[in-house]
Figure 1 (cartoon, helix red, strand yellow):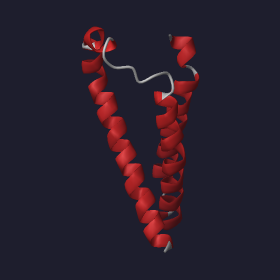
Figure 2 (cartoon, one colour):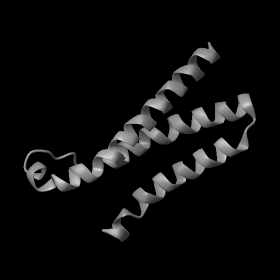
Figure 3 (cartoon, rainbow, N blue to C red):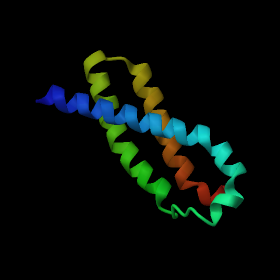
Length: 97
């Protein structure tokens, strides 16, 4: 049962990473098209908070289980640093804007 749950969280974390990658790669295109999209699409202020609220626990569980199985510290630290940077980007977005 635990292995199935871990596998499910791994898949969820990979899916979230792929969605994040698509989001980041599409961002320059969306910015270029923003004037045309602004009138039609409004994701609201909570979009990035919702994505972060989903990504943090799922990725933390996947990183923890990966470390428990493989005992590799490099992926754990790189993944944790990535999650901290995601959270910092959202926390300090007011300062940049």
